[in-house]
Amino acid sequence: MAVWVIVAVGGMVAGLVTAHATGEVLARRRAERHPVRSVLLTDLPKRTSLVRSSGGKVSAQVGWTATDGSARTGRTLVDTELKAGTGVVVRQDSRGTPTPAPPSLTEWDLVGSSWGRRAG
Image (cartoon, rainbow, N blue to C red):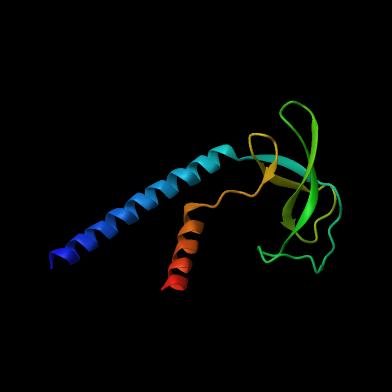
């Protein structure tokens, strides 16, 4: 009986420590990646075979002005059917490199539960 109590309490403590560590990592990623207004450089087709599984978005070339005033370009995922000149938001890291938006805690909750179903 005592073994089961130790296992239950140990599992709970391990889960809380993991959740706290994950929250800290996600907060740090959100602080490191900041949004920048950018402009789509090319028209995107209405229908394309390049649509990715991430919400029907496609990789497209965008341009923006960096904080030092220099012109930058890069690729990011955007909705289909957009025209050149359309404003989009790009997330970039401290080096000015476009990065995906960091996952929210809700998104990680969904991922974690699906991993648990796969493992179980």
